[in-house]
Image (tube, rainbow, N blue to C red; front, side, top):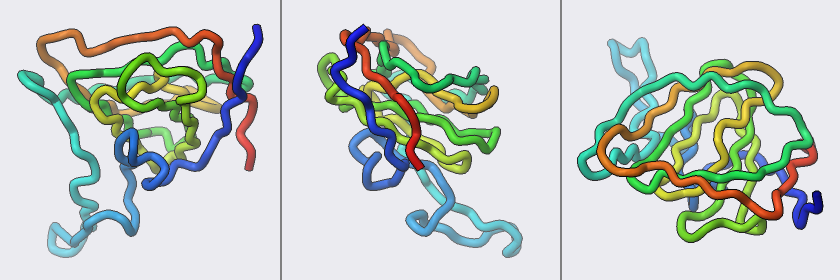
Length: 169
């Protein structure tokens, strides 16, 4: 199959990911303060979780099977009624593929980020993203998303597909 674009993998940073949502991590960007008698440092309010109208936030664990590179990005999904956050539990890097909210994305719209094992992501409502892309080994993620009335998952096929050939160091 012919690919129009080989997708570049970029480091996951707050600035680069801002059009798609928030990076969830303990770092200098976060408001933080001590709690529990000074024994615990709280990194406060790291993501704008959105359960949408009539929805409620739920917590699940997703267990992702590892993907191998090269990998063809053929499908994207979005959740138009609420945000969706992924927080890694296994401490392993993973890939994040996103495209702006709106109409059916094209391969040229895709952005690929390498998230470290201490970085989570929160996709804004309506942002296109590829399902979980664990690398190296089976990996668990805490997922916070919406439960409630209404259709909250749209999927589209990409033609042609994009290709993630490798991760450059």
